[in-house]
Image (cartoon, rainbow, N blue to C red; front, side, top):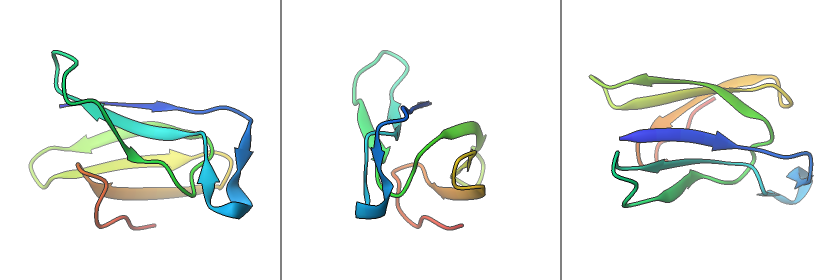
Length: 77
């Protein structure tokens, strides 16, 4: 799996909608999908715990570290 983040200063974070996101795909580019696309502003610093199935990231704007499963489920601060 491949993970990447996309962000911009255009954001409606107070409404729970965001143009920022974390996406994933297979290495050949197929299966592309946004796995995190709400309550996120400047996602960066992605780290993968492949053995246990966690994706970690920090949000420089919201000043927090979060994690989720590879499919975006079980999101935790």
